[in-house]
Figure 1 (tube, rainbow, N blue to C red):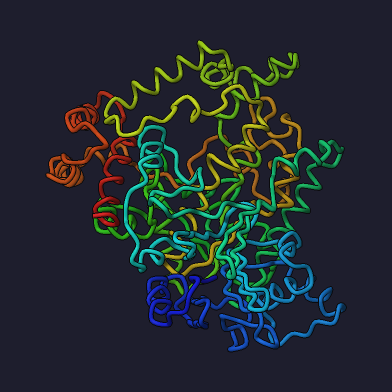
Figure 2: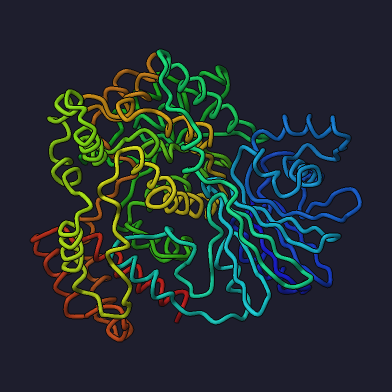
Length: 603
């Protein structure tokens, strides 16, 4: 796991400057390659092949191809055997070198053979091109800036900002964040002119004519259309076997591998599977707890720990922690984020770093694959009703009635959509009219069935920003985070399952619960609540010290002068929250976060 960067001209000093800004992503080693046409930089976190042979930038035998790589290709050993059979020879035991030879053998289509997470840049000197690629679901990032026919790229935006480029906020993205709580749903970033390579996408930059071409090489929607609906008497066994293989792949490492453990089904499944696959090995787990508070999950964590005999490390949060780390959290993320709940993950990664860990597994994606949130019940109920599956509808109705009323009854009729737009505009009355985009087109497709909605969660509305938070929080503390649920084989299998295998008679994650029977403790599998990395934002935002901090921001000259919000309306939102009239913490946080980001990165 690493930080990569580069640009389409030679400048040794500038690439070193970009490297330095990525130091937290790779504290173990660094390297650069510079010629008269291109500059490449790499900061290394050594995970596989810790020797000097694994250093980057790495080249092929005749130095005609160079690569900087961030991520892991888990099936590199199988690919290496195929490549050796075709006559390729290797100088290291790294997956990085496998990418080079895979490109030599199969060209840019080589990525279709990879199972892993990655963002890499490959420089082909003979063909005069740079090949950037990002994994199927965007677990690892690549950002780029293209202007005056020059390209700059990096794992993080801050490295791109080391160049003398104009810093300006992207009003469209800022509006969609403030109004609709949307982030990482678009190629555009919060910085005008800086873009994100999309999940499952490649970029080809031609050095001769200075042209750029984007290619979407993986589309989940097309894969789903090509897959038959999975109906099998042993579906739970198939899910279990594949999940265990996904975890097995993510245990490939030359350093110890630990795991996050919340006590929920997803992280518990990972930890229990790790123990099954490594019966005698030491496994360290890292958890967030809130002793004495309703959101505390210590009892469930204890259940897993006692059943697996892992080493358990735990941390908690205080308001003092938040205030001390707030600036670093905002800076580490690089762009605004939805709520302070991600701070819990930040602290987990900090704890793992303090305990000497470099690799952690995490349960990100399980809820979106197997419908883990109760809000998904509405989509399932509406699907049953529209397709006249009335017996299913009735069996599930009690458990999902409120979600059904909130989501399932909403169709695509014009009056309904107008009502949604009206309600949304009321919720965003604190905004200035700084962006005249079509609010209607930004709303979710409320009328979709469960599987189509989950597909949108994976590709646009949920997983992209959760993976961004995960990458920045983990890499801030030089931790490689691996997410078994986002193995493309498991994603495609889950997408092919009928809805009733995900939600059944009020039970979310139905098929996953069945698949984990006998492996995960019954107490965990029988859980019906959902907590995750929760933080008590609503209460924090009423604490005197935090109120004082936020008031100083809201009353500042800088805040009052922004063209994005109406100061008086924002103050009313804040006062209503303090008086307990309503929970406005998410809206208040988005405004505060936007202001802090503007000060930190734009001003």
